Amino acid sequence: MYDVIIVGAGPAGLTSAIFARRANLKVLLLEALQYGGQIVNSIHIENYPVEPHISGFDFATKLYQQVKDLGCDIYFEKVVSLEDFSSYKEVVTEENRYSTKTVILATGASCRRLGLLNEKEFVGKGVSYCATCDGAFFKNLDVAVVGGGNTALEDACYLADLARSVYLIHRRNEFRGDACLLETLKEKKNVHFLTPYQIIEIQGREKLEKLVIQNLEGEVSTLSVHGLFVAIGRDPENKFCSNLIPCDSNGYIIAGENCHTNLPGVFVAGDNRTKSLRQLVTATSDGAIAANEAILYLRTK
Image (cartoon, rainbow, N blue to C red; front, side, top):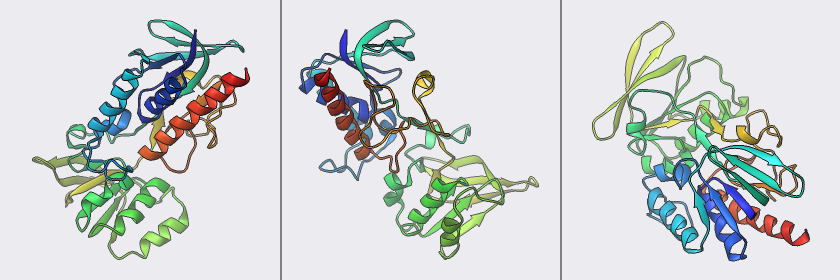
């Protein structure tokens, strides 16, 4: 029987493990793929306190090594379900079942990709899924944002204050985002709307150089840009527990800043919960808070 099982070895889950082990809890960390989560795709981290100019991989590796040094059990197994037995929980993976007194869900969320053939090759080489993370690298350069919701509009607004020009590409004429955001964008002279268009190809040698776009009539043209910010939504990794824990319409676990879910003894940390800002610093913050709440829960029981 574990004191706490943490599902997900991204920054939130790894930070939870550090705080739980430092409280001398028996901790199991489960991860389906590789440690680090989305941050390993970042070539440079520039906005994390104390650690400027570090790669996402190096950051994640340091965090992972810290967890290992503290003696945390770490198994690379995919979690398929969570079961509640009131006084304890069971976390079920594809290989095993584990009993625990508390659970911290830190499964994160994956950015939706455009699905283009060579998209993955250009991640960190011009293609980004986070404007606030990587926008500063494109100061006074030409960039494009693809998407039609609030995230795309907000990203375009943010980038308009940094980039030389911003091309907002959307496959429809109408935007799903808030009208006030759209009006703000229309007032910015360096923002150009390309609708209805979709991106059909990414071109470049060592880094992104051009986008091939197509309109509804099938007309094809190219757009020279240094950066492409994809903002077509995220998919939180919460399906395995959605039968027990309520999620919002987008699939995010409903929880406040104390990281409590509706289920006593189950906490959530990081990008898979409802929150206004999803950044590395808020993920690690959630991890610390969720672990502390789990510690307090165990003390009261």
